[in-house]
Length: 97
Image (cartoon, rainbow, N blue to C red; front, side, top):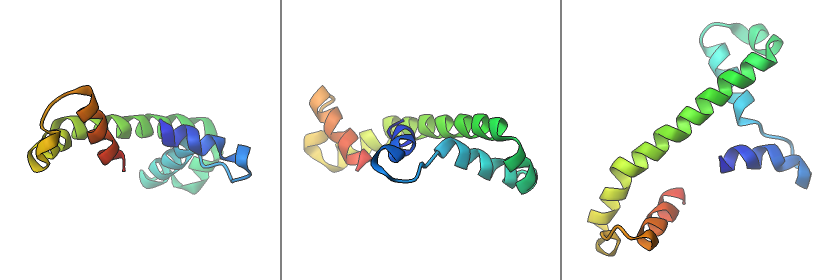
């Protein structure tokens, strides 16, 4: 969600708007054979399809972190073995980079 909101707020600091929903929708509709005209002529559909893809992508990365990365960090880095709120925050910061 941070990337989504940040991309939409770019114009507030004089940067071009970067709309992940439209980008993902455009790539999906062009990729499935809709063609450029179809993606450009249906902005609402492009936005909705891209939004669904963008949110599912976020859910997938969260599940990967929870089921794979977090336990592996506890094995590789011994102080991160405990499942306390502080340790979980540190793991999240490591994953989020």
